[in-house]
Image (tube, rainbow, N blue to C red):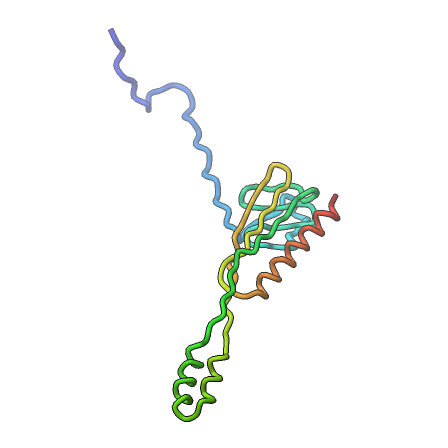
Amino acid sequence: MSEPPRDPSQQSGPPPEASPPAAPQQAGSLQSPDATDPIVLTIGDIGVTRNWVVTPNGTARISGSQWIARDMTRTESKIPTWAIVLAVIFALVCLLGLLFLLAKEKYTTGYVEVSVQAGNLFHATQIPVSSQDQVAQIRQQVNQAQTLAAAAS
């Protein structure tokens, strides 16, 4: 004969303990493993201290880390709407209005992908940009991270 099913509230022994849920870590709240080693540089969601690389994927020593920045932007130039309107208006008055068609505006769209590999840690982040100045700034930050990695070696 089979035993009747037991009521879970009548089982002997201590109840199983539930582990507390892990608190989600937001990208803006990256903390270095050493509280005395503050984050000195942030590239996207990658934090850099003098001794550590801190990412959402984990933390690794900065010494020997490899940094890559890929420019995935596109710059286009086009004739702005105001120049077309003025060219049409002044073309009726004199042909000098066609000179407005020489005006150009540049638009940059895309992102810069920054990846870091330090030991077993690999992380890549995509940073949207809207100007070539932002691309240059991100490249400068990657160069600073490479300098910190070389100094820590």
